Length: 197
Ligand SMILES: Cc1cc2nc3c(=O)[nH]c(=O)nc-3n(C[C@H](O)[C@H](O)[C@H](O)COP(=O)(O)O)c2cc1C
Image (cartoon, rainbow, N blue to C red; front, side, top):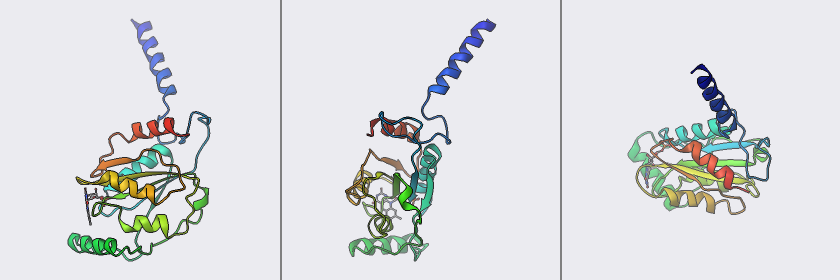
């Protein structure tokens, strides 16, 4: 009986050590052709008003070892939901790219960049597009992975906006989260790692 327990413990230990995503300290690695020891510099850039996308971003960072970066509009949106929604809508309708609060000094060092935000008016909030199009960051050749959180509609169209804004990058499948639900993130990261080249 005792020997059986020891055998089961050994099998468990072997299984755990073979798993590719065993915790937050595991480096993200991409592609079958690259050694699992290859550490990528990962950035997790996100915009979030009420915390849902931030929750998702933090989970991604925990699994990928990525650096979290919060995209913030220089002039904050109104606290009041209705005022915020109205301002976001006119910004979108008029294609206004708002100025952002700060910049990333060492942007070039990142190879893998997760980019996410909530769905606003069926698409990406304009500060995310400012981040992608107006900051002068060069996304070409980088791996850009979109994610978003949403209430009930247009999450995939929103991911596509991020893809379209970075035409010279590689784009693995993104992740959509209903109101900040983080279930499935570890599996998604595992899946895209295997599919990427
Ligand atoms: C101005 C505004 C517009 C929104 N438009 C949509 C929408 O078109 N589709 C949707 O599913 N959710 C929409 N939502 C809901 C948010 O996408 C959802 O609550 C999201 O999880 C919020 O993320 P956050 O907490 O990171 O800000 C909208 C929210 C706001 C504030």
